[in-house]
Length: 104
Image (cartoon, rainbow, N blue to C red):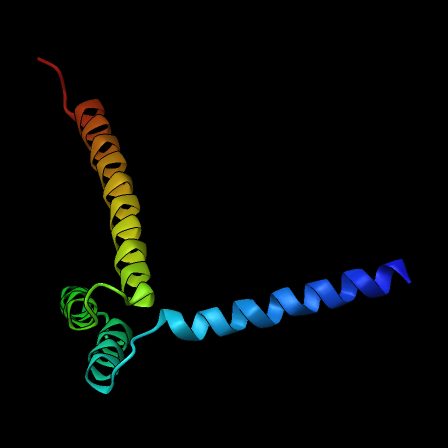
């Protein structure tokens, strides 16, 4: 019996979280179109255009589009990670170049 109670509670939480996910997205038709355009840009690897679309969609939704904000944040984090890796690669390349250069 104890497990049945927990099962009911977990099912209720799962249902409520699914309902919240629907509310996180764009609310009006215009905003939904702009958000979908941003997703299309991401699929085409057009990151800058996608970011602009997500910003525009969030602005159209008066800053309430949590999915738009999440996409912006995810892309920013991805860019920061790439930037860090690039800095390491450049540093390593400089080390290798310095090691190969004959010293006079």
